[in-house]
Amino acid sequence: MGSKAAVVVVAEGDPREAFRRVQEIRHAKSKTLAERILGTAVRATEPLPLDLAVWPDSGTVCAASLPGFEVICSRELAQFSPSGLTEMVSEWAGGRNAYGVFMDSAEDWSAFAVWSDGELVRGVSLSPGSGVIEDLGARLSFEAPFWGGERRVRRTPGYTLPFHPIDLGNEALKEFFGFVLEGHESVDCLDPEEIEIPAFRVATRA
Image (cartoon, rainbow, N blue to C red):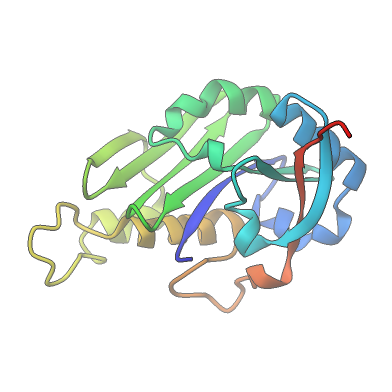
């Protein structure tokens, strides 16, 4: 599958705590959250492990409501310019901070964003085909090795970027949410195969 993700976490505190507290998922409120996202009634399906939940099938939303956190995963969030999500994410967040990571290794594209008080404070999106699509706001500390040349692409003639976007996307997953899909895991990384997220589809009439 590679690295594919389209996940936003709304958080009152450290967003990494959301996935460490999945035993506190409130299922009724998670269903309500999914209905708010899809704008219609939904039905619950089998929950998905986190490594699959962050890139659910089209028409499926994975949503988890926890005390202080909301997790939203949908392919429809995977926009090349994360700044375009600002109005929608700000409505969800209601003044809280929000963090998003989006990537598709089949396209060698990744993006991430951070919102605070309804404003985009950091937004990045890049792929070798399109170059740097967005680079908005002050760079975060975990990005420094990438932009500083420490994660340079080696021996790839014609590659148009100084580093692989998927490497940056996985580093953003680790920084924001405490897990990776591919790449280097730190000792405190979560295993995304061991964490389940509720999944929902649009309800259909019998």
